[in-house]
Amino acid sequence: MKAILLVATGMMFVAGVDAAPSTQVAWTPATLDFVEKGDAGRGKALSAPCAGCHDGTGTNPSLSGQLPTYLYRQLQDYKNGNRQDPTTIMNTMASALRDQDMADLAAWYGQQAPMRGAGGASDATGIAGRGEGRRMEPPCSSCHGGAGQGEKVDTPRLAGQSAAYLEATLLAYKSGQRANDIYSRMRLIAAKLSDAEIRQLADYYSRLK
Amino acid sequence: MSRLEIDELERKWLSVSLAMIGLFVGAIVVTAVSQGVHPPSHVETIDSASLHLSQEFAEDKLGVQPTPLADGSLQVRLVAGRYGFYPREIEVPAGRRIVFRMASMDVLHGAHIPMTNMSTMIVPGYVSEVVSVFPKPGEYPMLCNEYCGLGHDHMWSKVTVIAQENWREPATGGKQP
Image (cartoon, rainbow over all chains, first blue to last red):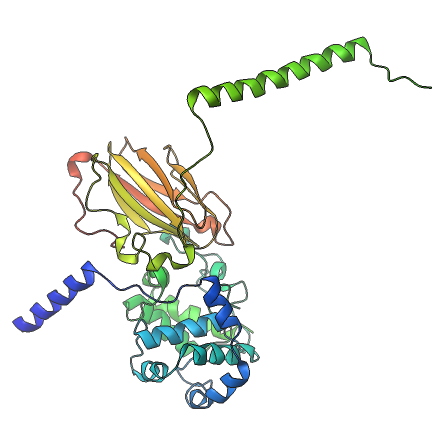
């Protein structure tokens, strides 16, 4: 027990002294250009193993029509260990990819018709559209777009995404398990949401068309 | 053949207004030269896209810095990004010289703490440095005063000014609450 405590304290100390950045990706003009020039044709061929899990069911996110910049950065973060998949599958998959493969895959998925929800969305929390000043919560739509379509540079599309995935992601940000958001932006936002609000927001965005 | 005709009264007012323009421009030039007022120079540049990978604005180096500057003033490092100033909450002592160093990670922002003289523009690609002393303890908002996007009206962070006797130096810089 003592040994575990010692190791844990030691690790905290190391983390406090020189914490690694939350992502190694910086959207310099060169990186943006590189991702933009991804070869969708090559990406299609590479995407065969992805489709097994990313089939639009369960807690795995749908990738169709997602922003290429977002997909590219997530793959980099999985490879560099900045984003940890609890099942480690994504870390293993991404570690085999080269930068060019990531840009190609991102281009292929970015070209697909975007995922669409069933409709009937209503924002029960009021946070998606209006935010809440008292809790310093900006509205989701200010970054993710009025229709949840995602915005430049790499704010992901949420509309039509699997509700189970959205809920799990917000909970992971809330607990700090997911920590690849620069300057803790999503962690700070998710930490102030109740679990019930997270469920309502996940439901809202999954229903958007 | 028509001659340009200027009424005597018009001529008088014309010379009065020209004299006024000359007076004001002259006043600006004289004060600028005698008081040493000039546009900002020695500007510090920084790559806004890779702020989080830089030495100074790395995620664990933000906030009130644990080591005071040589003259005893405290340094505070902040990153402005849509939509907040990071760290979102900082604590500074009253009556002490605070040197704010700020950079934008995306677009043009402004930082302003109402009821104080702390105000600056934060231009992407540049480091903004502004010095202020807060005489009165209390909670202050730090607002963005340059339109930066749809969440602009939600872009504010909290600055708590603490009475000098209750102030304790932070052990580490950049911990977000």
